[in-house]
Image (cartoon, rainbow over all chains, first blue to last red; front, side, top):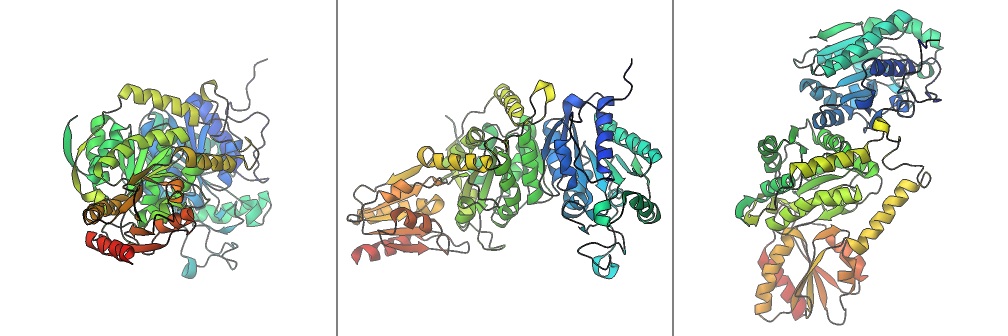
Length: 245
Length: 357
C-alpha cells in the first residue's frame, strides 16, 4: 500500500513537541518540516533558534541548528548565511525575541536584504517567561506586567513588524498569516514555502509573521483563544502580503 | 622577511587575515576604528566578509554565527563597546565557539575618554560576561608582538574551542612601528580547516552525522559542561602562561606591568640601571592565565618591593600580583588613569623613592 502521509523527515521520531495543548507552535514546526521535505533541502538547512518557547523546537526537529542569545537570531543568521551561501538558513523567533529585544537585529538584517528566511511567531505575549507584556500585546489585553491591560498612555501601542519592515526597500517578501483554522494553515504553509523558495532563488530577506495564540498565558481554553484572535488579534494585525517581489 | 611600517590597529587586522580570519563584524568606536576600516578594504581582496553591525551586540553575535560554520571570525571594540559584547562572548564560552575579540582599551568607567588606557584588565581576565568563563588574554607591548599574537590567536581559539582576547590599549592601537608580517595561510588550508571545524561544530544529523550538541550536557551529567571548562582553565595555568622576566635576576625592586606600561617601564629601567639601581620587570605577555609562579618565586629577602605600573586607577593587575606573592613583598604604585599616558620620569622617581628608603 502506498504511504501518502507521514511524519516529515526532520521531525524527530518519537518526539513530543513539549508545547502546551492548543499552542500553534507545533503546527508551524510541522509546516516548516513539510516544506523542507517538499523542497528537498533537509540536508542543507540550518535553523537559528530564538529564545522563548520557540527553542523547544530544537528537541523536536533534527536538522542542523544553533541557538542565539535573546533577540540575536537575525544577526547570527546573517553571518552564517554569508559564510555558507549554499545552505538554506532560517531563524525561528517569537515576538518578544524578534520585535522587542531583537528589533534592531531584525530591522538591519531586513535592511541589508540578507538572503535568509524568518519564521516569526506572534502570540502577543512572552510565553516561556509567563505572560509578560510583549511589544505585540493588544491594547487592553492583560499581561503579568500590565495587570490592568495594555494602556497606550503608559505602554504605547502594539508593534506591527510587517508594516514596519515594509518601509524598507530591501526586503523581498513580508506576509502575515495565521494558523487558527484549516484554511489558514494551508495559506500559512504556502507562505512558508514561498519564503524558503525566495531564499533558494537568491531573492533576499523573506519574513512570514504567523499570528498565534497562547492558551496558557491568555488564561483561555484553546477554543476561546481562537475566538479571541478572530475578534481582536486579527483586527489589530490584519493578514496579508506587505511585500512580494 | 620584508619589513613594513604599520599602525597597530591595521597591523592587527592584516595579521588576523593572514591567520585565516575570513569574517569580521564590528561597530565604530574610537580608538579602534582603523581595525574595521582595514577589514572593510582588505576582506574583498581575500574572499572574506566584512559586515558593519548595527551595534556591538549584533557584531559579536554575527561572528558567533560565522564561527558555527567553521569560519575563522573576529570582532574588535573598545571598553564600553566590549561591555556590550559581553553577551556574545559569554555565549561563545558556553557554546565553545572559537572566536577572537580584540579589545582596544580607552578610559573608563562608563563612556570614558577616547585615549589609551589600561582600565579593562578586570573586564578581560575576570569574565566580563555572565557565567564565570575564562579566556586566554594576550597583552602585547609592541605592534610586532600584537601581530604575532593575533596571527596565532585563531589556533588557540580552535585548539581550546574557546574565545580568545587580544588586549591592547589605545597607544599600541594608534602608534606606527616597523613590523614583519607572517605569511598568509593558504586558501586550500583554510577551506580544509573550515570543513573540518564545521563538521565538528554543527549539531544536526546532516550527511549521516550523529545528532550532537557541541558540548553535550549529558557528557558528564548536567554539570559536565562547566566542569570540563574549569578543568581546561586549570590546565592553562601549567601550559599556557607566557611571561617576560626582564633584568629580574639581581633586582632589588621589581616592576609589575603589561602592555604599553611595560614598554615605558623598560625605558625607565635602562635609565635606573645606568645610575646603579637594580630594577627589573615581570611582564605578563598573557594576563590570563596569569603567570603566578613568576611573581610567587620572587624572594622577599632579595626583592625589597614591587612597583606596580599601570594606566589604571584603581590598579587592577596589582591584585593578581599581590595574590601571587601572598603579600610577602610590599607593593607601591605608579599609576595614571582616565586616558593619561604614563610618564617615564614618574616611574624613575617612584623607583628611587622605594629603593632609597
